[in-house]
Amino acid sequence: MFASMDFRFLADVDASLNALATVLIVAGLVAVKQGRIELHKKLMLAATGVSALFLCCYLLYHATCEPVTFRGEGAVKTFYYALLISHVVLAVVQVPLILRTVWLGLKDRREQHRKWAKVTAPIWLYVSVTGVVVYGMLYHW
Image (cartoon, rainbow, N blue to C red):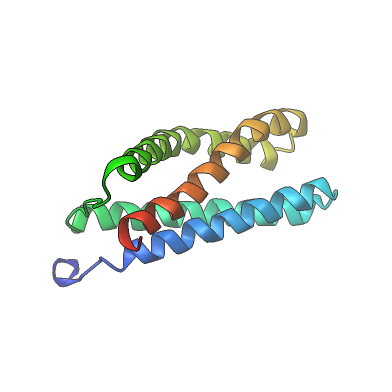
């Protein structure tokens, strides 16, 4: 069934999911700063779901599609690869951080949740934003 499908469209889906995750994370952080804990919880769980969907689409895309090569030269190429490497390394690091932070939040262990979130949120935001930038540089710029 999947053998004849063209999954190249998933690159666009992945960028959209990263952008949506960014919006949800920022909205979740704003909500918690305003003391709107239930809204924060819903937004961060939505961001987690969007990021999980991204990971599924990303893996399917890379399992079924030929790799795309970056065509930039010089300093742009160096910047691209530095960004890509930091993005990939932190994307791997963020998975257990997100899972632990969400688990602590769901268990209402707020003090520990806050400590983990101070590390997790900036990494998660960086990975989401750089995912969109890497996509733009690779496919459109």
